Image (cartoon, rainbow, N blue to C red):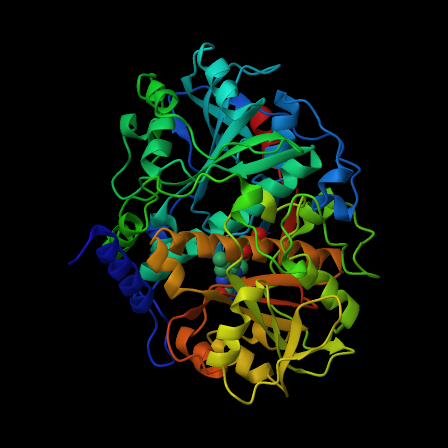
Length: 561
Ligand SMILES: Cc1cc2nc3c(=O)[nH]c(=O)nc-3n(C[C@H](O)[C@H](O)[C@H](O)COP(=O)(O)O)c2cc1C
């Protein structure tokens, strides 16, 4: 019997197979860049008056480890200023780059091809300087675009349900932005970007003494209702797909429910939404497999509503997510001298690596260590399920470690299956007492790493690169929407690595373009029980000196005049 879940699993697996890059054939895309129709990276709503948010005059003084450890950050009240700081340090602009005749903005959160499919919305109670409402965040203006007023009478009900004060943040994707360049594989990239944005939100919140909790039991349809999407006139092919809803609250508040009662959600359908989304491109190509996989992987609200501290519980000490215990960070190089906000602001992707710079084993381990979930630490305590993603590491230039293929195990339960399925000659030799890190095979993997990463030399010229290996088939069979969550987990790990690279004085780059099955063959994986979903590289960057850099919000001064 074909059930709805079965056919959604089939559809999702089909999408995944069809969008693999192979040595002899890339996933389907236009094959050229239609510059005339390049999507505008900034969504704005016409017909509304934006509420400008102040830019930080002075960054929080927090140190590097305050990004992670909640205990280091004092609670700041929810105000227009602190909401501005939260967005500036998560989804705001970080700089402009220019060459004669062309300039483009970079953001705190990275995005494949700098196309930025992820949009953010806030649902705020009345705060000093803001009236309660549903808002779109316009990062170009650093402003909130009001879409609807939320009646004061609704907030006591919301607070009663969630037991505490706070506000909502929702993320959505405009698939077209990525599909313009990447065609059918674009859905994957959009999901990576959601993961990066989610981690960026969690870090920025933490610096303000706030915590982001993902409300996993709120369905995509409910998110659309909360954001007034059924009252929105989307330009054709430029609709936004609801991804997730989070509640932002004071750190330390435990047991936030993960759902919203239908009586609250349905109140939003009665609100009057205003504003018309801007047109991003004049012409489009319909990659209809993307709409199909989006539908197949929709969260229809069956996700468990366990509180986050219970949802991610696994037994072994390395993977402790129990709220009473926290693993110490890897010493002695856990902490960098660069302040937290500076690390956030200076994050960039390296476009090339020097092929020379090495890092020490301590630095390497300190970076990897931050990708392990910990209780009371951002960003992995926001309530994804138990970790499903591991790191297959290509170590090129790490003093104190012989070059070779290594494995960081992020969830102990997968070790027997991995050992059984990978090549017999892999050593699985532990290399550090404090980290679940194993040597699989010694050797020079520079050219292999580049070759499986779509021949990109950034994967071989770095200090190390990696493939993120996810427990796959079983997760999808449990629920097809897990497909999206696996990509979010990889994006979150990526965001940690971006920041850790900066903290350790090197630089990173996300790699969405890799040859899927050759990675699996390299490991000896026979089927889709595990799949590589994202690649990454970290090392000494080679700067492109042709580019000029301008301050993030210099254009606002020009607008003001
Ligand atoms: C999901 C994802 C995939 C990416 N894939 C690649 C890649 O395959 N090759 C590459 O050179 N850069 C890649 N990048 C880096 C982006 O091009 C970069 O983030 C973007 O240009 C914005 O620049 P910034 O990171 O310096 O802000 C990727 C980034 C992300 C987030």
